[in-house]
Image: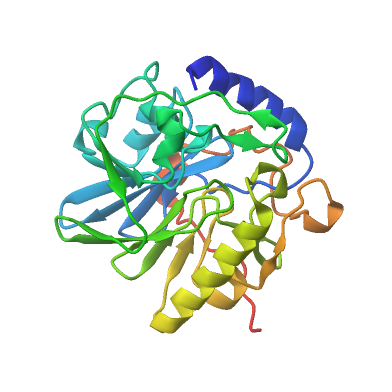
Length: 290
């Protein structure tokens, strides 16, 4: 998907979701000493740093302000050598496209072997209950294909790959150092807890729900404290909150799912500033005791 397609999506999605209070991205800044993020309109991309090595999780839109906002976090794009992609949607791979600024031209891209079929053209990405095919994403980065359950080590960083099909056919969530779970578009956090991600954007909503249930079971069996970090609705360290509505799908055009703390139009970034990125920690979303 070329830059013009990203711009088209920005315009159409802004109109479609304006006032729906569905997307609640974090502003550019830091969750803690290891995890920082950049806001690109309604989406977040993340950076994880340990012992001098930084990996990137997702590559956002084909977005002209990425270098600028990375500078707010003192991250040089040339230092990024490994990028882990949760799935290949426009707002998660744009900085790798051929007509992007190619900030990461030399980085290796880690992506699930099933998800890679979208990039090869073997499968086309469909949304709105199969009614619309998205343009293909074209990238020349070297790819490393991942299997479900595989563990990758980048320096001292451990990345465990967990397959969660449904939103697309082969998305991965990444459990980093047994403490940070980067979920992409697997979970949507509403005001009262987590749900399966937006119904209109899934390849198979029932499969997405089953994957979310399996993911919760997997995580609870570990009996560890986790930070669960989403692509569009912030983060939490409350497992009960994250999976409170795991069998329910967010239906974005139903008033029931509105989050009063979400911006009216997530594509307006006026409150995302360098001062905030450098000085305001990114707070977690709500908690629940049950």
